[in-house]
Image (cartoon, rainbow, N blue to C red; front, side, top):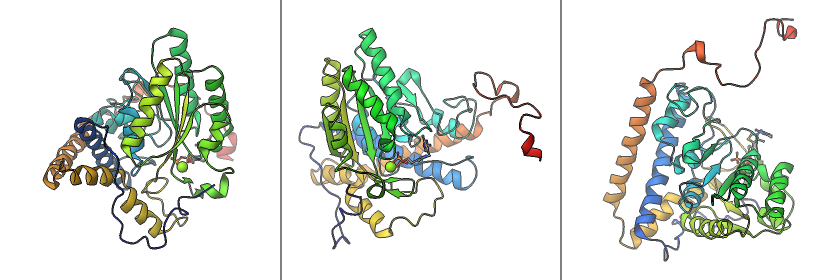
Length: 355
Ligand SMILES: Cc1ncc(C[n+]2csc(CCOP(=O)(O)OP(=O)(O)O)c2C)c(N)n1
Ligand SMILES: [Mg+2]
């Protein structure tokens, strides 16, 4: 399996962002995709900073660099369609319409958060907007999408479901159980594998057999594509066609999106498993925001001033979300376990703890 290092040319120092084909994309759509990607980027940069200063507790997996996958896919869906995501899910949740205030409040552990402050960054969900949740179980999101697609086929409600998972997820058996059943039952589901080249610190060529993940999926007899996940228009096009097929009874599609995370596996990582040159090359050549901005700029559709204004507007949205979350109340300790399924720990349950 090719790694994300293998594709870097030897003279990869000064590189322009690769152009993208917008020939069949309206300016309104491209501008709205750009606005969403900028919002996601700025939201996560701020959230990551708040993790490092301790204002947001716990770890966090940022999708910075991978925005085009979520935005391209979700902008091709109908609002009633559903999406389930992995532990790296801010981009999917925001693209699916979760309000930045609600998400930031969840990250802060506040009552007004999407899981009323009980879930945090890996347990966000917004069923009203069809976001079936982030998920800490690698590969499980594909199964949630499968279940939703089964319900849609059973009810004939015309909805499509998308399951986002990583290349690491594609090395778990459960993902292929889901793909198999979806193909066997012709379910309206789209599997989107965000292949960012790494599962934590393990490079894909060290852990994955075969030519590509898309090739592996082909064995289950469903249309399967390897695509440029840093090209929002390419992701949009493939999903639009896959959703149309799924809605008209044509069954599932598998998309392997080649993408790259600019930051570590989690915030604060001090990894030595990839080189600074590799990160710099992917950022320079394939940053999805720079690519769309550059293409629109060259077409005379977006000036530098307009882009700066867009950034300022999105910065305000993020600041508003942070202000809202900071001022919001944490859950009342008396109700904190309501609707939470799990262990009730009694004194003496874990004697070895005191041993
Ligand atoms: C079932 C399961 N096994 C292992 C883990 C530990 N784990 C968390 S993230 C991760 C790597 C996931 O890699 P990938 O699917 O490529 O997603 P990425 O982090 O690159 O977005 C692993 C192994 C887990 N959360 N769940
Ligand atoms: Mg990965």
